[in-house]
Amino acid sequence: MKHRVGRVEQEVQREVNDILLKRVRDPRVEGVTITGVDLTGDLQQATIYYSILSNKASDVKKAQAGLDKASGLIRRELAARIKIYKIPELEFVQDESVRYGERIDELIRQMNAKD
Image 1 (tube, rainbow, N blue to C red):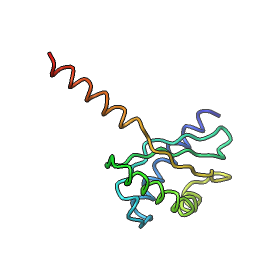
Image 2: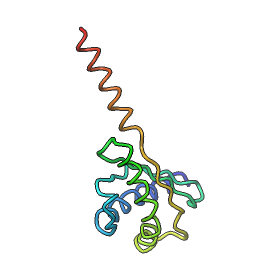
Image 3: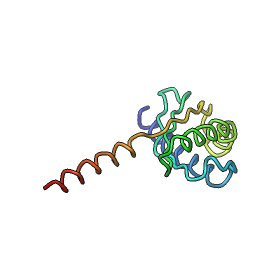
Image 4: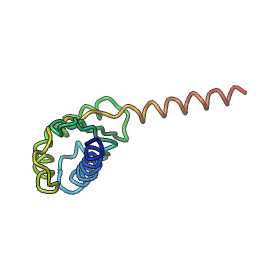
């Protein structure tokens, strides 16, 4: 069962990225990239992680609002593209790992500059 969940997660990630590029016309979600998807074992809930190029808090809030607004459209499009019994409920969460990696890189650069 775990293997199936992983395949569905990959398919959802690929399709949501495609839907954001081609179907969602909201300017708030431009530049949003889906970085990962976590599905519950029963495929009822999907946590979709995203990142944006901007680090400004206002841009993050706008992107989150745009994704929340578009979640119905995204879910309908997923239903047409993916053949599973029930399309999961979608929750969008900002992926903090990109910022964390940038912070680590900055700390390493600072250490190297001191030497």
